[in-house]
Image (cartoon, rainbow, N blue to C red; front, side, top):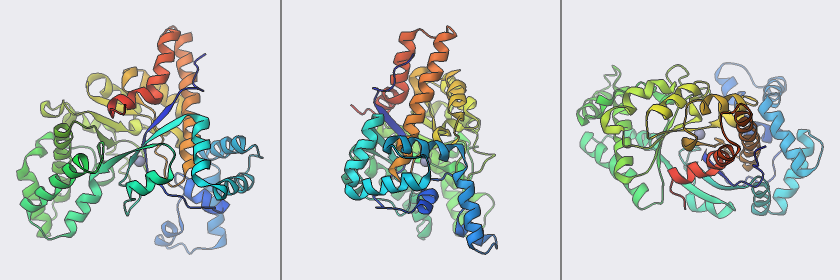
Length: 392
Ligand SMILES: [Zn+2]
């Protein structure tokens, strides 16, 4: 048996949130669900909003394994019946009595003591100090490049100034604003098939010039590819890790070009071998590719977020697939939670359960000693993230 109850948890990838006070069961469902559409999504598709359509979306959202498991976790926490209404009543009473105290109790029960937050979602960007003031755990901010790129594209500045502001803003975030790393969601934009030769500033110059003149011709991809290369270089200069989104995301992700394997050319290129890169979401459902890359590339790491908790019982399969090749010292637990504190709680419960059960299997299959498995549990749940982000 692997003991995980007493182990602390670092959530290596999640998103900041503020107290929303009491919420209805419908709002809770919309805020907590991974997918399942929204009013805007349906209306953009020409489907008029009605009670029936609303019920259709709510039904889908409440009937994923993830959602049912999360409600079950909260019902156990509050000692109420496992249905959304009962959980909501207990949850709202706790939030109203004292939000921060409630979150402290929730997170203490699962040992969650640190959240590494990608501040690039939601937008507009939350104030780091305000987020910290409400949360009873350590908050570690990470800087996302895409909102900065969007802001720079809204200006009419030419390449030299664009390049200077891009570099200076990231350098300032890392040197003066307390950000501990950089993040990219290029998989949501132009895909992960980034040539390392994009690093030449000439490509940035040519691409921005083409965008400014309305020429198209793949210029946005050329610009984003160059800026990703530059972000890797800035990470190395500041000695912080780079997070790159791989694998599934919301409905906007480029599901074909999000495979981690597309990053091989870039990450094995000599000049980028020094960069610590965390493949966010472990590329799920292509997690075996991410694990392979963490095996062959010394500074590539894998996180387990999003697959855990949103892919429900795939948590076990993800851990089995990732641990098959990724070193035990380079796999980090994460949730990709957002909007409400309960996602991070339920995810940590599921993460601990899956870590304990998969490592116990590896012991019984004579792949690991009991001692190695127990130590791996501590590394995956917190130790590896602490090392990668130098949190002590
Ligand atoms: Zn995320």
